[in-house]
Figure 1 (cartoon, rainbow, N blue to C red):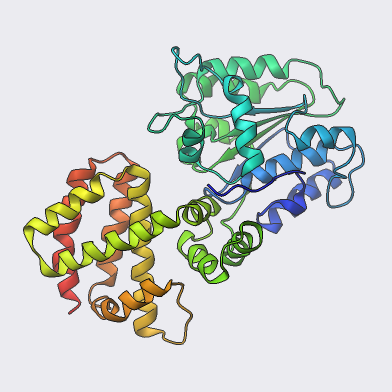
Figure 2 (cartoon, rainbow, N blue to C red; figure 1 turned 90 degrees about the horizontal axis):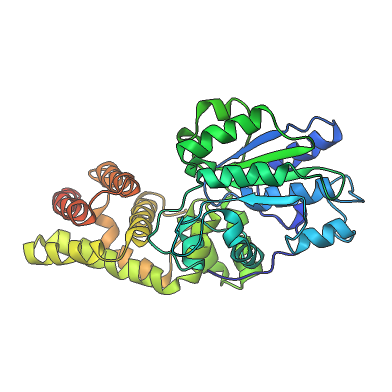
Length: 384
């Protein structure tokens, strides 16, 4: 992942929907800060940066109308994420052998990742701590640790803030204990739950929080961040922003993984040519190749394919619209786009979306992609 510097932690430095910031500032101005708030929005929408900036604003000694001062002792402690009233709970790969049971066991690594790049997902987190492929959760020991930390007196005399990243990854025991904490919170305590998917959270927990919807980022925000903050070529930045659909995590992964993007392109070209030729040996070979690249890359490849389908339709029917493609992609689509039309585009999109859905639910990749390539042989020829 591309590395940037995330200090100081101010609203003005956070890439997020502006209305979400205005909502939080209005809470403070009207003295109506809910003790438990759920920031609900898709991955890569900037929820973590928003929560940290909000915490800094609340703890700042000299807050302005729109931001923390960034200079007082409390702000200085926030800049390094070492303020005693700032607490985190996040999913960890629980392991007795590695002596990992709660967030505290990996807090140093957590701080390092945020200060390098606050836009990250579970896969990035696991990669950072060398635990790829494991299933991180928020366990019952975490809920006990939360209660212990929040029972202490506030260091600043202001709020004690507990930021819970991905509360949907709590197991049942942790969720039940968290419910009791939300019902009877310690004094001067603020819970900020940063949630991608609230369907996996107990309804009773949701009912005890105030929900702030944090929408996906605008394409322009993503492209601008990639270009100005990460030195990505503007044309490439706009292409990546279009592909990521407002998900900054995906955008940064794509920008960092330029080789991955080229690999997806090569794989997609091979897949479409094999589907058109309908050679059984080639079809089985390409399905095996995709099945071996790992779950996260498989999901990214599926999204890449959906992106190419959309651009094909634009090239065919809306030639006056700008294409979000690289040079080699444009050259390929000049020949390939004619096979993607109103005869097959809906079914193609449905099959790729269906594949992504099943990957999210841990389907067998070999079976999934074998089935997909067979269906593609019919769908590609349907557009001829």
